[in-house]
Each structure stands twice: as structure tokens, then as C-alpha cells.
Length: 315
Image (cartoon, rainbow, N blue to C red; front, top):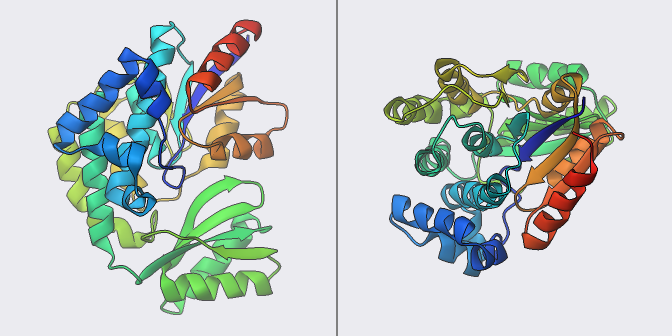
């Protein structure tokens, strides 16, 4: 029997105006935006709807904003009685997945990711860290490159294992630059510097992880009602204590997205619904398995189309 997975995008998918039509057309969704503003003591919804983009893109704004937009759309699926068999999210998106799985309340999650964004922003001063996407090189070969560069005194690690032929590296600006050049020397097709504010999912995030562990310790974390596939292990996890540990590790560990998608497919998932702004994860899933059914939902029109599509698909 076919199974359904909800997947949630991470940082980079944010755009001004995201979630506005859902907010305007649904009382259920509107309550999510109001809860975010109240919990954070700021007009996050105003930044989301009106921008400017530079303000929305700041790590500590983008993270709660993406969680809020995704959860608002998720609330519409819940309202229609549609529940997944699995949930997963890319980096920050893992928190949306944990809301979907019943592990965190939305209010606790939006508070946590705001703090997560602040700590990530503080961990490495601007200009010290960097990230780059390496195209056309397998993980083992690229890992050898990053280890060689790190051993020479310039820290750099694999950060996002997204899909075949697309891996992001992260570390010091010098480390990423040297690893990008060496990867191209050793056969990578391209190395693209990413416009990000820090070296996410690298060893340089360990100070942020230590601070963030104290935030998680204060929150009510539940066992997962729906299996959530963890970025760190690429395996479903249900135990609340294990989830807490993995969320701390996630800050400085690679996002194993390709493996996570393959794990869900191995568990019988044939339909993936990407819930939130953009279609980044939809594109990655299709590169991982062309036969997978992928539905991207970012507004009311695509939500209604998705509900119709899910009625047609035999789940």
C-alpha cells in the first residue's frame, strides 16, 4: 500500500509575501501567524508579508518565518483530515516536521527556531564562514577533499547531501574556497558559492549547539505520533530524548537529505507533499527518484489542487 510523506523546506526558500493568501483566506491558518507574533513579541507576519527581503532573510527571522508559513499550510491539511505516514524537513524544515509529528507545539517550535537562528548568527562573525554547492562529485570523493583541506588547517565539512551530484560544503571561508578549487581539480563539474550568513552544519556551529541545548531542555518535547526522519541519521525517530539529542547534533552535522528520501521510499512512501514556500525539495526528490509523485503546496490554490490530487492517488 502506498504511503504519504509531508516534507518541509529550510532556509533559502523564504520570499516576501509567503503565506499571505493562506493567512487572508483561512481563519485556522491566520491563528498560526497570530500565535507566532505573540510568542516572539514582534510582528513577524509583517516582515513576512511586506519585507524587505534583506530583513526576512536574516537567519533569526527566516527560520521562524519559514516554520510559520509551513505550519499555517499544515493546519489546512489537518483541518481536512489529511495526515502523513512520515514527516521530514531539510535543516530548519525538520522543526516543521516535528510540529507535524506532534513532537513540538507550534509555539515552542517558533520560539526554539528564533533562538536557533540567533545562536547560529552569533557563532561565527560575518565573513569568517562560507558554504558552496559542489556539483557532479560523489560524497566519498568530496569527503576526501574536505578532510585533506581540513588537515591542512582550514576547516571544511560536508553539510548537505541533497541528491545525486549535489552536495553542499561548509566551513571557514578559506576552507570552502580551497575545497572548492581542489574538488574541481579532482573532477567536480562546478562549485557555486552560496549567499548565506554562516557556515551552517559545520564544526563551527558547535558553540551555537551548546547554547541551543539549554533552550531545548526547557521545552516540552513529546514522542513522535508520526515517524519523523531525522537529518542526522536519515532514519525515523520517535523517542523524545533521542529527538532532543539529534536536534543539537543537527546544527553541526550534515543534512542527509538524499538518504532520508530513500529511507521513506524504502518504507513504502510513493507520494511526497512539500509544504511551504518554493519547490526546492520537490526538485531534489525528483532527482533522487523520478517515479515519486511530488506535490508542492505554497498557497491556497496549490493546497486545493493537492487535496484533489490526494483523493485521486490510492494511499
